[in-house]
Length: 520
Image 1: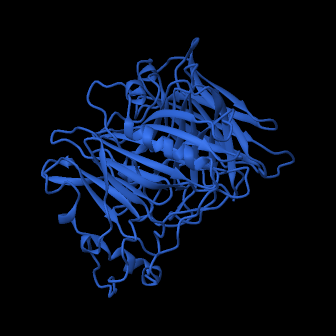
Image 2: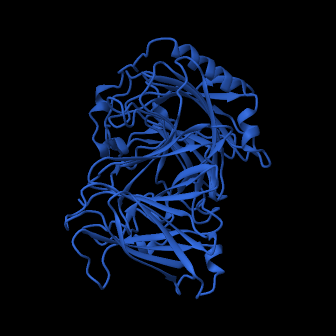
């Protein structure tokens, strides 16, 4: 698998379309849409033909730009699409250059008719760069972003960004960019190297003067797959993106990753940083899954010493997502990155997704400039090449001011800390302290008989466990020690631990299900 390099201010992408209040997810996915049908027909035609790589027509002067020089090229806000019409949304575009070489076509759709939005150098301010642009012609754009008065009615904030492959990022109120979503993930594991499909064309539907939502369509292309996408974005404290996709394989792939999410985890409460003043450094701290049977699973993230791939076999999951549950600034102490304001991303499937698996891939990373966490859905059966695969889901971009992280109504994991307390640990021994909170736990009396159910992978022995009320939070804390090796040797293989709390015959917490990598 190729490492997912991320230049923090450049990689982002997002497709949007919005629902009117009262419109259900399923109704939006099933609605007749001539623009989507046209893009889908184009994707189907392309899938029957060999892949054609994008033309390498970036002027040499743009390829030679440094990072800072490229960042000095900025779109002129006065030239934003729909600004002169005074519409609630505005579109701005990214310039091609060393860090964004591939071109995308952009179309505006008005009353069902489309027109291409041509590239023009007058739309950009080139800063201190001395570039001769007279011979460039229409070289296309690198991507786009949409603006909306998300936090203040007097200012149109950046709401979503489409830039690079099929990446997109969207924001809810009070949030700043963190993890990314993608259109599709191909051969993240199991293949000869990851393939990154890319959005090659966008169709922006002109919003009305009172629009609460905006619609963007996109065409996806890669050596193995084509696809048509519709994104409906509705801004708010929790911004939702309703995604409808029709995917066509050119050829079978090792891993077909649906609704992929890409994030970063460098250090956290369960894996403190080795140096520096910041206690935690991550865009997401766990993978959350809600099964069709109603079980909630929380898998805390790690920065493993080597690539670590795990999965959950499921049928028709109710949802999954990479979440940023920790919202306390004191746990990050980073005034620049503000990890406490990074959004969580929750995928709510629409329709019958059938059997498959939620797969989580974690890579080792030396610093926070690398995305090293990927989660996605893999269907149990791939469609035959040329046969359409229709998929629909709602993406919730959640923050502290929004609906909160998607989590069970009973109890959930607040934190899981790893390491010794006053009592030193023996060789080959580890200790975890896990705090749970939630309505079912809050209402229990302090002397309630709460028990922990702990299941482990073979060769793991639980040495000690205690459950007691956390008088500070009103939740409950589990502390336990375990050994994972024999003859006092240290752990050399990943260890799986499954933990949940019970009171009488009732389950009162989600399942904390960790895969603990060997020490670095």
